[in-house]
Image (cartoon, rainbow, N blue to C red):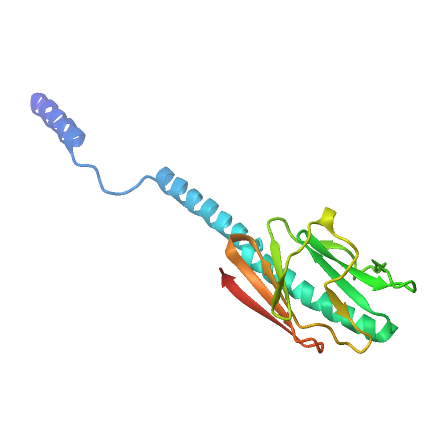
Length: 185
């Protein structure tokens, strides 16, 4: 009987060793996969929460629309012409001094501003393209002037953001403006 028991035990060991493994995963393997999925999900959520190229172009377009409207209103309220000079790297608001020369406007809101890195602009006045100077090349002459009655010259300002997104701000010369998101160019 003892011999038969040894034979059965050795037979069980052979069958156990050569038996096909089950198709499941170990607990450790499942935990590793779940951790990888959690890390990748959190990375995707972080990337989505950072403003993308289209969002930055839209924000800058909205800012420009508000600031240009404010400059027009300021010209009416103060009975002084307000100018806006746009150059390749940014823009500055100007006021005409008593001697007729343009000076930087000393205002906390209508101040000199730079475009976000990687952005560039195109300006057209009365459907004619304007070549914008670089910051070092600029003089103190505005391209846009807001008169004391709120009028200005019709303009089209295209703000090109990163990855081809751009916003177009159009002014009709009577204070009305339209901002359009143009998507990828």
